[in-house]
Length: 134
Image (tube, rainbow, N blue to C red; front, side, top):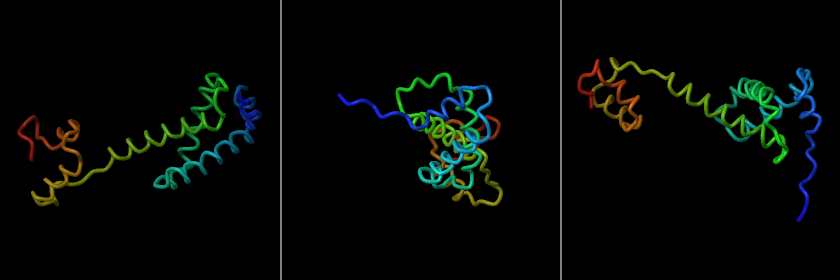
């Protein structure tokens, strides 16, 4: 059985385990996360900085949970992945469409496109508990 290679991010782990990791450690990790987001989540390239900084904050909050069973950056990427998912969910819900400018057929198609099986979406197309539009 071969041994797992030494984690090259030991200095980052040590920096984040202190109360104040310092600018160099935060900048280095944020830069790597930004590159990872741009490479793996291309629709979010413009938001990569925000995603990276939120990920760094979460890594800092949870650094004591890192047990060394995986490479440090693999562990960090899991945080980044969840931040991307949360960002996606948040911004998907924020999209609005004025139904007043749509024809009835366009409204029906919009509802179909928005996965009619989703109860929160179905509720949006009801008027005060009345019958749904479609």
